[in-house]
Amino acid sequence: MESALLAATVMALLGGTLAGVLAGVIGTLRVPATIDGPAVAQAGARPSLPTLAHAGVLLGLAFLLAALVLRAARVGHAPWSNMYEFNQAFAAAGLLAYLALERRLPVRGLAPLAALVAAALVAFSLTLPAASRPLPPALQTPIFLTVHVGAAMLAYGIYAIAGAAAVAELLQRGAKGRLAWLPPTEVSRAAAHRAVLLGLPVLTLAIVLGALWANLAWRSYWNNDPKELAAAATWLIYLGYLHLAGRRDRWGASAPWLLVFGFGAILFTYLAANLVIPGQHSYSGV
Image (cartoon, rainbow, N blue to C red):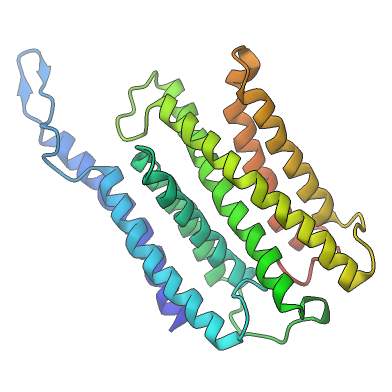
């Protein structure tokens, strides 16, 4: 049942985005020609890429949340104790962060980017073993498992949307604002900044709770573990972004690139520090 729901999630996320792309292509082909050139299509005459991708996000999130609830009921703890589960929770957090921003800012144009990131995470989850195993001794602390890892998952999801907004700003800047399906440059920058302001306290909480849990499990608040070092470096990147974002010079203009780099650091913290570089967190996948 979980696998079917996850497959439906990927199909809904990618299907909405693909339907939007096809609608745009077909609409462009059907635009009648005039003496001076192609006529402008009537606004609202067909569903746009952001609208269809947004619908895919809503449907995909419903399937994904159902899968997470089933997983939690089956394993008896928060459904983010390994990479199979955390990928799904990470994707859900990103989609929820997008929807929260979309309620306050006109950023529906970020829906295709949010859907693609979430679909990639869920598809990756489908390649991993789904069997539930007993938790290692260090993870057998339900409160820390729920709150520490949950805070990391939420921060990662928020920063995925901050990265998507930064990419949208850079694309619009390169196209001189001509990409109608993306939010305007100013809106993308405002959305990214709001996401960083929201995500930094959550990431800070995750790091602090991780230190407390490490002392409980390993008798030390800090062990120079690869994931600990990567998490600290990621935190510094987002702190650096807040410094650059307030500037009005060429350094301030580079702030979106720092958000893209920051999301890359998150992926490194999550993936490389678990799969490539051995450490005390290698068994958990989070």
